[in-house]
Image 1 (cartoon, rainbow, N blue to C red):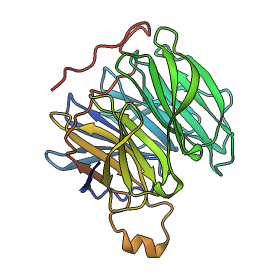
Image 2: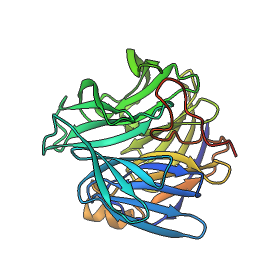
Image 3: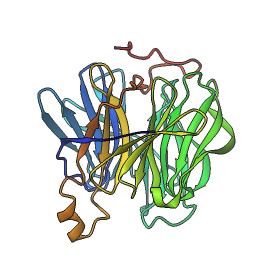
Length: 305
């Protein structure tokens, strides 16, 4: 097993940083600060940050084919114009409740945005997983979710990975690309209690899974057979998610949070809420974009670097 440490890339001081997403066309990283309702754009070269105030909690961000982003906001989905900062509602959940919010999301290979909800008090089974189609229709996929988190799909589009954090399990589903249906849910990896709680995740170009361990201060890489292959240490207790970026997709960016730290822990972990980066060796895959296909075949990804 390989172990290494990530370095601070951006001292973002995010209360609850989440949802990193690399845009290879402009060479920047988008991520959210959920509870503050902000979307951040980080340009590593030069080191510049632009922040957008969404005006409500925002759980996930997805790229599109144009100069805007699709957001999973507290009560549904919205578009953010990155030139003007304007936010426009796309669709609202019929079941929207003031004590629920979206927590994490990602586009599938056909350009549909998947995102899950959770209760603000984290009560058991209050959330659900939804899918937003490019035409604007929302589908409720399944419920009985407590803290919906990481999502990703295999290169052959036959498998969807998913995390409901309190289960301490990374699950897999059989996935039908044409319909967007999922089934045959089963455990892939169970996380021991002393290693933290599984949070956000991403697959690399070799089909290995990278998972942020909330409360564990690390990101783990798992082989297709479930074997833990790599540990990336982060100098704060609460990493939240990870995504590959950089010109060659060889940089692993890791978002973190400080929301659960005590005042003393804040002093001891001054970089909490920052974005960290490491070059672990393996490279990532280009990000799926919202609405880039008809939903019946994989979208053309951005070219591999």
